[in-house]
Length: 259
Ligand code: 13P
Image 1 (cartoon, rainbow, N blue to C red):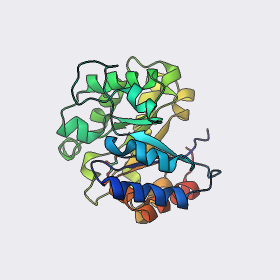
Image 2 (image 1 turned 60 degrees about the vertical axis):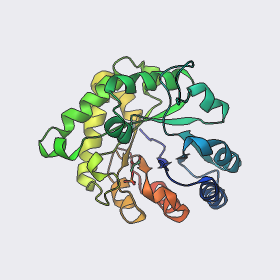
Image 3 (image 1 turned 90 degrees about the vertical axis):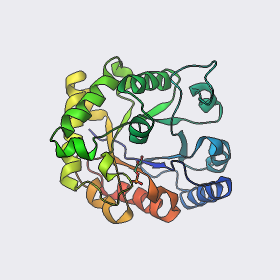
Image 4 (image 1 turned 120 degrees about the horizontal axis):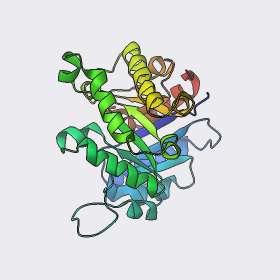
């Protein structure tokens, strides 16, 4: 099955209004080609969504948010609802990023609620999973990722499941400069697809896009994207430089093979 490559740029808690706008403008100018065979999404911080969205509106790059509330609305100080995001033209959202799981204490149950809220609200989702270094060293990386995924998919209908993008982001590779090897990435992606197969079926699982995240840079993107079953990437640090991000996008259009 052919899967359309996906590249996301997760700006995390970086940029300010001026530099975020400059980055968005550079991306919009440099990626005017709407026929490129991939989905590109940037995920700026909440306060800059509207201005970045305006700058990207004539480009092929979609607007994403880094998180959403599991609740629809109400007395939840500081939270941002799915409806508020769609109101701003946001079409994608990250759910379950490891920084939210590990630094901000999000449980598997909360991630599943956010996933359901996002999809029921019409947002497209990148669901993030990945093991820590300790979990990897103790030999339970695959179990950890499988559990995160099973919990998220437990109550998810097949119709919603086939729409999601899953990001495999090993925590030890995020922001460290040490990306997973191509072999590690391929193996983890195979395991993830196997979990989706046992939850649904192989036809559905073979259509789900699974992307890699963790210290992706122009220098390693092509090698990782060349692995069968790696359908693109979720980029952190390198997404803050327009040239690097676009070069990773180009690597995805050239190097991805479905498998
Ligand atoms: P880095 O690319 O900075 O390692 O971050 C990856 C990531 O967490 C993307 O969501």
